[in-house]
Image (tube, rainbow over all chains, first blue to last red; front, top):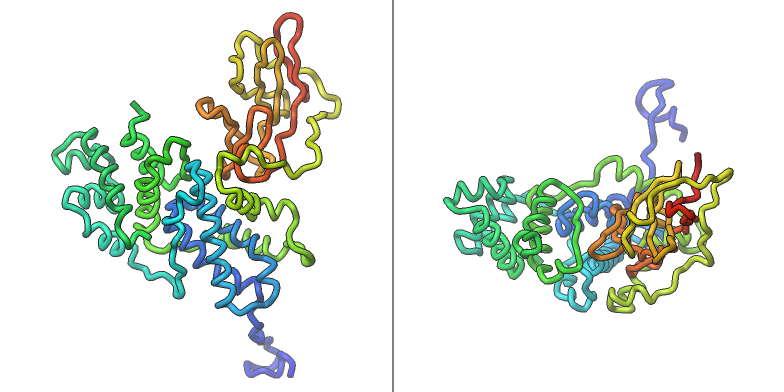
Amino acid sequence: MTAQEQPGGPGEVVELPAAPRATDIALNELELVYAFIYARVGNRADAEDLTQQVALKAIPRLRQGAPASAIRGYLFATARSVLGGFWSTRLGLSEAELREDLALPVPTTPPSDEGVEIVQQILAQLSDNYRRVLELRFLHGYSLKEVAAEMHSTVGAIKVMQLRALRAAARLRPLE
Amino acid sequence: MNDKPENRVDKIVAGLLRGRRLKLRGGDAEEKEAITAAARLAGMRQGPQRMHPAFRNRLARELEQAPREGWMTRRAALVAGLGLAAGAAGGYIGRAVETRPVEAAVRPIEPLNGRWIDVAALKDLTEGQGKRVTAGSVGAFVFRRGDAVTAVSSICSHLPCELWWDGRGEHLVCPCHPARFTSQGHSATSYDLPSLNPVHARVTAEGRVEVLGTE
């Protein structure tokens, strides 16, 4: 059957649906990888670099025509390794010292859209002051000075509180 | 003052909140928990992120254009972080300087019709500290070694980005990815990167430093 014989009127060219290309499948999976990495490094430039590393590392596997589920497992295993390398290089630590940080779960579905809610759930486990300083800084984008004014404190004290709050937040499981 | 942990961490937080790349120093490892927590909070606060269309297109091109046969080109392997994997197998980042460079030999920059360009006075250079100079179209870092000088290209051997001199860590650092080089131009991270191209440099009888560059 030619395209012209498809319904749609004489002489009208109707595109036949093309089988998804390996590259498209890979890109869709890499969207998940990107979101996964971004949620851990917190900035676009590093997330792009690391996603690119994952993609290029995975090319031979992608070429083998593996199903999306198998590709996903491989991509996330690679993403964990690349993230481990990223942190160990940036912090000058061995990966053994980062072992706990590398125990990241593999997402099986696209992440939900409730970023702020997730952050709030995490922060809800902190003491009032710690939660407030991180909420104002990360969710409302306040400067230290603004946080200090809001909390009737000094910039120096807020800096110390922010550090302690982040240390406390790091120990909360949902951040893993 | 800036070395206080609360100041360092706040600087990192401020950078993250402005969407900047994570710039960390060796000493930041002591605050790794706070820093990784800050990165995660910054990453999660806007909800799941999608790839920027330009990046997605670039990635698609790279996936399409990668060699059809065999595994990867050396460059792709480097980009893909096989160097990182090697570093991970080795275990400790501090051992990275022991890894062998993958290139056979890195040639010095020999500009066609090159000219010696005056870039500095020897007395203005500090022993062991890199100084960024420009000799026409050749960018270089020059290092004083007693009464002599050496120079290496200012362009990273991996991604074509301008390096900067980290005087505290005494390394040339790439702003585009986690790569560092010694003043001799050798890779100083677990990335098994080619060395930087040497640049010809000399000291004149008048004590001036000249670099072989272009008009």
